[in-house]
Length: 240
Image 1 (tube, rainbow, N blue to C red):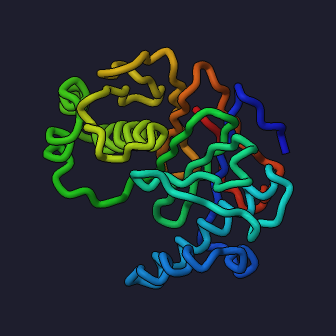
Image 2: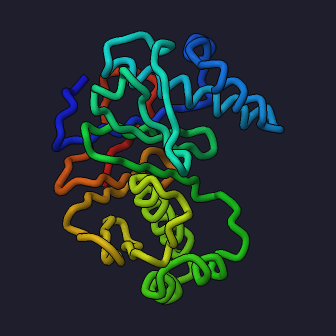
């Protein structure tokens, strides 16, 4: 496994449909309680698999057993390693959609990741964009040919979600307070507070039919797809 440095971040893509009984054994009682809240068994199974993979991957960095790790959650629900594991300064984030999970890991820098399947139903896409996106994003979306709008919408959405998750605020921070690009190159174009040069924003295409993004609160951080650990379970096709 490539060494994680302060100027690098690793993104894992894992298939939640694979057999995961061994990984599930590492979950805590709290995680099982959260899993049991899901109404549909498929959603419950995906949650369990995602948490199992998260523990397995973090344990490799920490050189411990997956079940030994403990987590706490910030004011808006962002997970972090609890003492004594927090001394490692590892930061991580998790997102999953339609059977695929992305797990992003960095050293010291806050990180957020988001992924969506392009077939996801979103209702009136332009209405959502008008309500939620910055005015420049909405205008650029509407100016695109109709056949390009769905991909652009999800590129925009995942970049905004990843940024908010890195901030640790979730949707308590308005989506209109910053602006991102809609094309294949991910860019943070404007933020209401702070300096866009202090951020790294990277477009992801982890598998066919998916788009995603990773946001890192650090300048010029290199995003790497890790291919050694669990490589037979990864669906990575590269980062554009």
